[in-house]
Image (cartoon, rainbow, N blue to C red; front, top):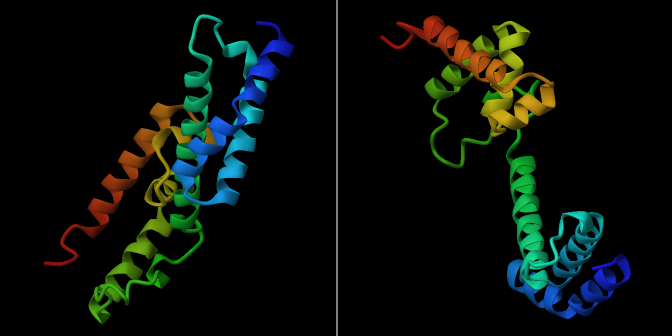
Length: 167
C-alpha cells in the first residue's frame, strides 16, 4: 500500500477511532486527543505496517497501547516523589498511620537513604518512586544489570544500618 492509500484508509477510520477512544477515556476531549495522538503515531509508523495484517485492528491496537502508556505515565507522574524530597513529609496522616513513632521512623529511614552514596541512592530512590528497572536504566544511562545490583546493594546497606533498630 502506498502512502496516499495508507493516509486515505487512516482518514476513513477516524470515526471508528473516535468511538474506540470514547470507550477508553469516557471523555470527549480526551478521546479527541487520543485519536489525534494515535493518528500521528500511525502516520509516523507507516513502515511498520505489513500489508497482509488487518489495518483496523493494527490501528486500534496502536490506540489502546497509546492509552495504556499515557495512563501509566500519568499515574507515575502523580505518584512520584522528588529525589530530594523528605519522604517524612508525605501525607500519611489521612491513612491514620502517622503516629509520632512512625513519623520518627520515616525521618530516620529517609536520613539513612540520603546517607547512601549517590551511586546507590539515585537508582534506589527512583525505584521507590515507582520507576521500573528498565526506566531507571534508561534515565540514568546505565546497564540494566548495574541498576539492579545498585538497588540490591542499597537495600542490603539499609538492612545493615537498620539491624537492631527496633529491638
